[in-house]
Image (cartoon, rainbow, N blue to C red; front, top):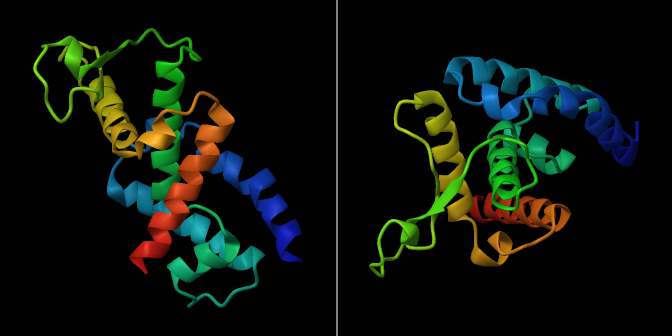
Length: 165
């Protein structure tokens, strides 16, 4: 199978199964995420007809797709973007740190969820999503369109991946 057709098959049949409910099950144990990641690796290696001993980083570079951890980060960033711009029906508000006090601090424009401390699971999920969203470059965070935001986050992720190697 040619690579462009392979990518279409991957995006059509495999990726939707992985990304369905990604924000929720990304909070599961490392062991369970590892099982999903290994299944994803096997599928990509099979589709691209790669040797089973091919390094995982090389597999994702050849396929030009995001690994499981990168998909989780992208999904969390999209969730916070939608919350911030009122694109979701979730009854959750975001607060800026400068709403709490008027001191000039390095993190005064950082966002965080406005939830009581008793909602531990929801708070953990929202906090980790907001932390990643705030860590993105400001030029990406200032985007108004979801499609452009997602494209910029993917491009940023790929550039970070290449700078690590």
